[in-house]
Every structure is written in C-alpha cells, then in structure tokens.
Length: 279
Image 1 (tube, helix red, strand yellow):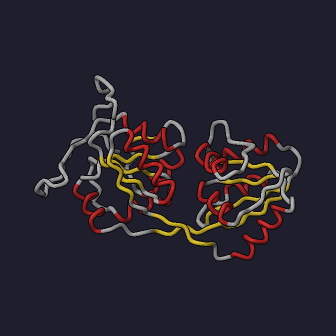
Image 2: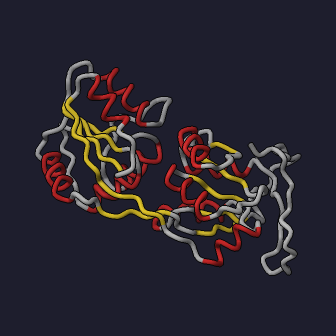
Image 3: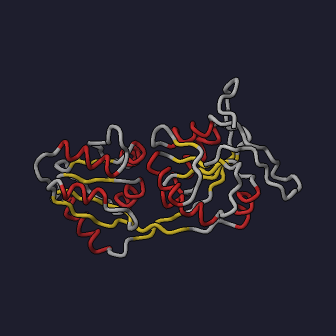
C-alpha cells in the first residue's frame, strides 16, 4: 500500500468509510473529527458497558473516596470517568488523580475532575504503576477502579511495592451485535477502515467480522491495544503514535484509500485484494 502520497489533500480521508466502534458522546466526537477530514463515519457500537455486579462495594468505595480515605485514585479508561460522573463521585483535594493516558485525562477534565498524573511514556496500567511507585516511596492508600475483565496489573504492581490498594470493579463490558447491513458492508469491503480502541473492541471485531477483507485497514489506538488486537486474532495495519483519537485518525490518513467501491454499485462477489502487507 502506498503510504507516501505526492501531496496531502485538504481532506485526506475523502472517500473513506470508517467504522467507529463506540457510540454516545465519544462516538459522536470521533465521527465529527472524521467528517472534518472528509470521511464517512459509520457508528457501530461493538461494546457497551453494564453496571458492576457488586454495586454495594463500588458505592462504599466512592463514599470512602469522598471522605478522604485515599491518597490516590487511578483511572484507566474514559468509561471509568463515565461511572464517576454518573455517581457524582467527589474527589477531595487531598486525593490525587492519575489517568492512564491523554484520552482518559481529557475525559476527566471535561466533566470537572482534575488530573495530577499522566504517565510520561507508557500509557498503560504498568506504566502508570511504575510512575506512581517512583513518585511515592512511602506506602499510600490507593483506589483503583477497573473493568470486570481488566487484568489486575496495576493492583499487583502497586501492592508489591508496599502500597495499600483497594481494587474495585466499576463496570462490566458486554458485546453488542451490529446490524446485518453493517456486517454486510464490512464483509463486502465497503468499510475501508475499522478503528480499534481497546482489547474488548478487538475481540468483537474478530468475532463479528470473521470474513474481514484484506483491504480493510485495522487501526489500533496504541501499542497496548495493538498487542491485544493481535492476541484476539486481528492483523493490525497501523498503530497511532499517541493514545488519542486525533493521532489514530491521523494514522489512518497516512494511507491511500484501498478502494472506492460505490455503495450503490452492483455487487460482483469479488473483494479487491490490493494489499500484500498484512501480517
């Protein structure tokens, strides 16, 4: 695939159809950014978020948070921010807030929370743990809020360093089947790119689109997501330089449109095979 076009058009994604794997305000924001670059966004939520099965523990932990029990609160996803906002959680001035990356930090700031720490280099649970451990040589009380399926990397590392960690499930991730029309658009190659923003999304892409054409660009939002996507069985074509939506879309924009089959053109049953660099 040609990754170095002779010129950069004003709308580098003109003609592209890009699958946006989450809905809500996040999906609307991504869709708006794609439209500004000339793409046609296809919002198809592949995952949704359900309440934790242990509401009592979450509510008690948020009450303890408001009371100043914790020295640090760690936030590892924008969805966790949604949970904090939904519960109108109070973070007192005595509690510092660590966000796993710029996207999560932006989500916190957008709803009125402050951010005291974002990992400098490694935007992952391990990267956050390493930086917190370096900053806090003395034992601290730390609240970690996570998805039900998240690996307890942060909790293990912080606990091993001597910190007192309360790990609480804030939400569950569930798959959402796409419509038959979107499934057919993916299978036929009419969707030119799929944005993969988490390991959960990657798993749903692999499960729901088993006949993914080789011409469909798979774009991962960061190295950790790319690793999870490959583990789920996907071939990742491009990885964003930074763990942000803008960086992800810019990464897609570096590619030339694989093909531009018109949505209303007669089906030939042949899927173009234009790339040989999958792997």
